[in-house]
Image (cartoon, rainbow, N blue to C red; front, side):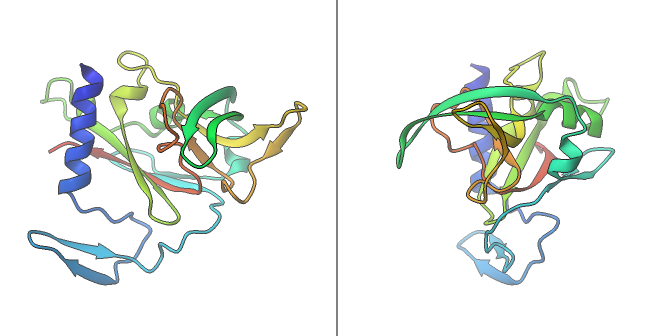
Length: 196
């Protein structure tokens, strides 16, 4: 029930709201029948060397693999279906996303009941691919999903290696998703937003 609500909420925002990451300059307006959105020449893709956490938080911060390695890390093996590769199983090492969000301190409105449940994250890759994660999905008291910001992987011999150029130096991992659509390569930014 909760997942269905947040799924519909995410779809609403994807299709009704325009969004440009804070670190990308707007260049060319694109006019549609009811809205004006903006494209950016900085959506060319490429390897990410870090990401910025910003938005409705008290402490914005930029993270690199070196910075993330100073946090308490965990290991996670995920399996998902990829249309190109079939079933993919891989082990990652990284920092739980909820730890970074808690450190950033999400801004809430004390006059709104359970305002924290109105918050969501917009994750953007270097090619401007975006996914939505409801904050309630990853909070231990609600969804408890163990989302991770990965910066290393474990190969079949057990060796710990940095992520390769095909994944970028930092990757968003959403375990439990049946497909890998929200396992974001080349993570560039995460912006905390609030439903209207």
